[in-house]
Image 1 (cartoon, rainbow, N blue to C red):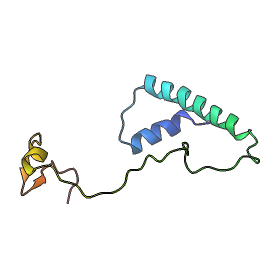
Image 2 (cartoon, rainbow, N blue to C red):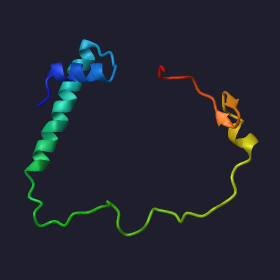
Image 3 (cartoon, rainbow, N blue to C red):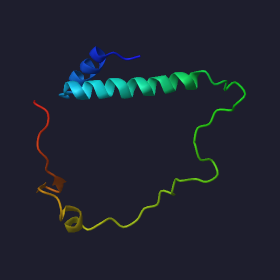
Image 4 (tube, rainbow, N blue to C red):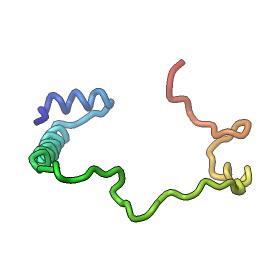
Length: 95
């Protein structure tokens, strides 16, 4: 099970500010999830073949075909800012 101190540490690492009520809620919710996972561990799956996909009766992948691109004006019409054919976004990392 997960402790409240571990939830606070994870929140700090994720740069989240949690109230005491949120810590309590996440403590309860995460422990319920972990208890459910613990139940799943007790199921004998030794006679069940592994799968790589939940849905195996059809392919959800499309063929990779070259097609026409959108016009430059259409691509950037809703962009807040463009610079030399690229989307301009605020810097999020320091140099």
